[in-house]
Length: 199
Image (cartoon, rainbow, N blue to C red; front, side, top):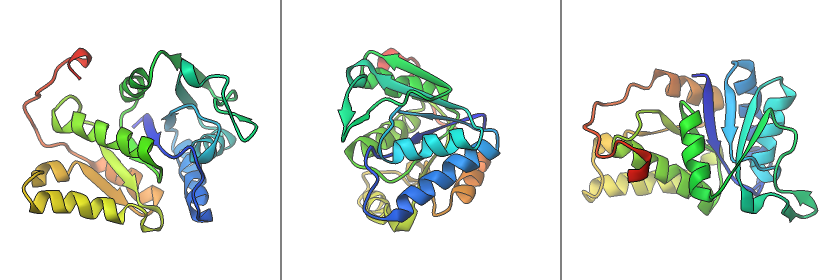
């Protein structure tokens, strides 16, 4: 894979391990020559993964909605001005669509509602056959255990097919997750959607 999109929190989380693992992922992407695509933020885990990738000599493309440019949180600009490239788009939806277009795979670090929403939207697009790219969780400190249990519950209660549950990979270490993404072979499905305007 030449580019991986990372979804993650605009907050750093309660445990130091979240930042440590975000930094490790950023450095690992740079070391493997994989460009980072992300939401263009300068704060929280978003800033950590981007800074680590840049410091290790990697390329970073940020995609941010125009409405967030110029905003500040705790005295820090929301947008990251030191990236390889920062693309400014018109909306949150355009941001997600552009990140999906640029990336060849997706990783979710710990985060909140925004991270959950990005993760499940990209999984839904895969379920509908709009893309065939791998999607994985970096399950730092078992953060995503309840979410994975919910996915398994959805299968048990017949709201989710087992094949579709298999669209979501998860690993506890960045290197193992990148290897799983690289080895991923999608199940052939008849696409329900063919064009972005249908999303």
